Image 1 (tube, rainbow, N blue to C red):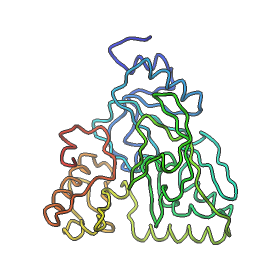
Image 2 (cartoon, rainbow, N blue to C red):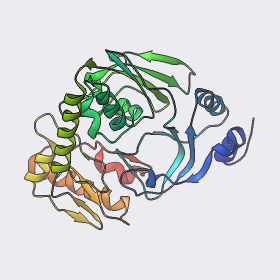
Image 3 (cartoon, rainbow, N blue to C red):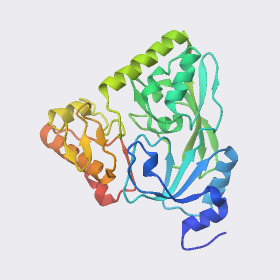
Image 4 (cartoon, rainbow, N blue to C red):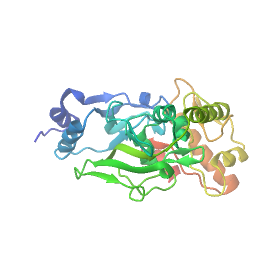
Length: 312
């Protein structure tokens, strides 16, 4: 068993050059901000996942993050003191039948949605505007346009890095709730099956076009993570933020979007610290003005407890 004062050296001794040290992480998110990961590993096959799992039995790592497209993350400017894993785009096969589609965990949702529409398979059009991977979407129960993973999924193949077990979990076993699942940080979503139905390719593509057009008209582009706060049960977060007069609130190069108030835009060269400051101010002022408590939907990565405390 390798032994040193640095877990990254021990892990690299076991995994070789495929393990990258002090690798860019913030640049892999849609905010394009934040520091590096202490270690980063792209997984291309089941054999590599199993090799990793065996290595983790020999090396204790401080933290673990499984990365999708980074479209729901804000990474600290200090980076992430842990291991980041990412399934490659080529991991697994995309397979369809008349009622089900198997989507690899590393596949982008918009790509899967468009491929299904081209085949005339309906039911997954809503995902064309969700900029994440299938694995990440299952992990957080992503949704939009009246649907969600919870409403669409038939089951998912899950590998547990701790127990080395490969299981197929049904919707109830995934323990979905609003923008959340019961999966742990050590469980990798290898693939998921979604329910589809036979339709007309032309009609499916028209649905895609409508969704894309709506998003372009109502949501800002640029550097953001989509919705920053979860919607309380009583009223959408965007309405609360707007009612508190916070559209356009700015700290440094981060700003509450004037187009959609639950989006925080970050200008090129801006810092994650700026985004976090805007989030903290929004949370505090919405509570003062409305009595509603906003909970982050964006996942905060690498921040200290002191920085995160306002959101607890």
